[in-house]
Amino acid sequence: MRFTELNLLGVYVAPISVMLAMAWIVTIILRRVAARFGLLRHVWHPALFVLCIFIMVLSAITLTIGG
Image (cartoon, one colour):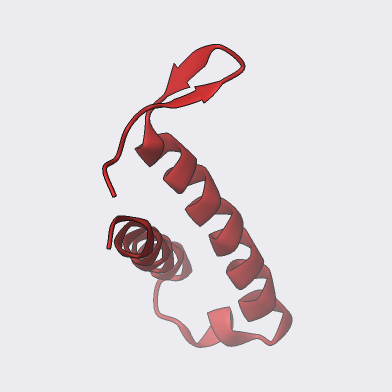
């Protein structure tokens, strides 16, 4: 699949911005689940951990759509 611009109501949007939004939503859900079960208390740097989770989710979405 080629990554081409998406036409959203007459505005062309880059596909990475849509993937970033999807990854952000998934990361918010995963962060709330981790906070609910107290997993973030056992991490050395919670913000860095959440950033790494975001990057992994974004990579997975990109590889799934592009592969």
